[in-house]
Image 1 (cartoon, rainbow, N blue to C red):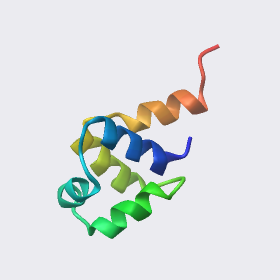
Image 2: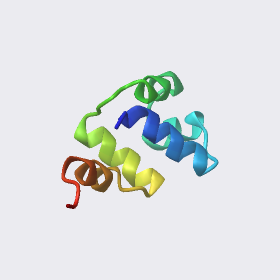
Image 3: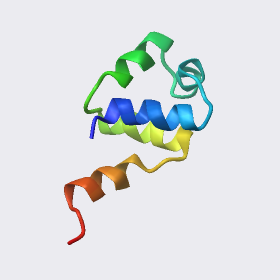
Image 4: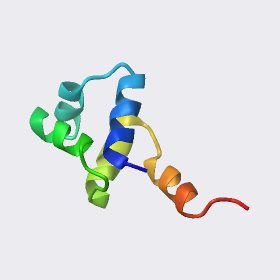
Length: 69
């Protein structure tokens, strides 16, 4: 899973912008675009993004790493 692209997809599906996410986590808007390009993220940053988007990226990563047989 390309985590940055997935975050961008979830954000867009929720109808929210990169500028909105930047104000929520908080960081510069340009940093949000850099996050979208990354394949992995620091756990604390991913936690902040998960909380503000109310989306469990950790579960998705776990499900991908340990698929049910």
